[in-house]
Image 1 (cartoon, rainbow, N blue to C red):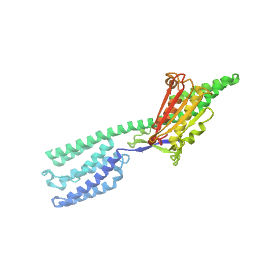
Image 2: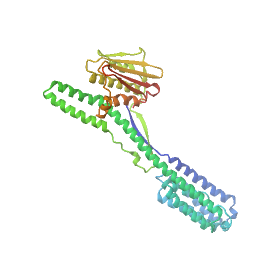
Image 3: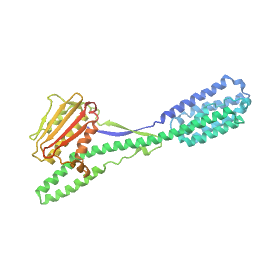
Length: 404
């Protein structure tokens, strides 16, 4: 049974949000530890205790807000930065010597977490605004731009802008990758549908057109209509049956779409004897030669390979004639399985396959070569005018289970 594809949303920036969550908790503990190690240096310790209590409650209560981009709203970012700025400006009120001695502020390095949240949410522009406000607050708190203050301000400013820029580049890369994966998945699905249509509907329409033309009369009218529908359907198949709906256009979660294959039947990968699938193809004008021992392949790969053989035999019947003789040779090697389909027809004129593809006749390109490409194998068509055609299908054993 064929596999279908779905997409799974994932975000490469999500680990950054998790890291920010951990950073806020650790730096909260660090700010409390700095106060606990030397509470005597503060002229108004009760103010410091009150602020640090608010800081702890705010940090723990807002952990879900910084768990992802959706929860980190503009309102939250403004309030979070306000908590940091208030702590910086309260420092000289709590510690009268803070302006004479370069020491940590009340929130200490917890402030950088607020700025980094801006960077992750809005990129380098938001980070520049937040870090500039923090820089201004630090200069006001210090009373003058000391060397250590300028150094710390520049460090936060440059780091936050750099991280914001990296996040923007990562998001752009995610969107590009997501679109490429979706196009690839849609293309494979289109080719799979095109193969199925070629192996069924188009074959029937071609037969109705041929038989109706031979019968003449009213049947010729039906043949003409069947021919018109065949041309229209071939055009549709060649032009594309599926227009992908790009989940990557939704950037609300900063997500990338990863293509995931899932089987319709979980037991579908059980080994199948390729000889059993090819045996019904044998007949008065089709000779099957096989090793005499089971040729086991995973179910999807075996069925796709058998379908490719069937498409090759359909081409023999249509293009070489009902009386053409065909031979199927199955070779079972340790590292690959080779199936060769040969006929005694007139052969394929040089350039005819490329011309057929241009006309929308994708039998060889999709039903044969497309199937083998999906299996990780190859399909080689060798034809000499007047000497028949040989189609060699090779499937590596390690990839035979990847049929779509």
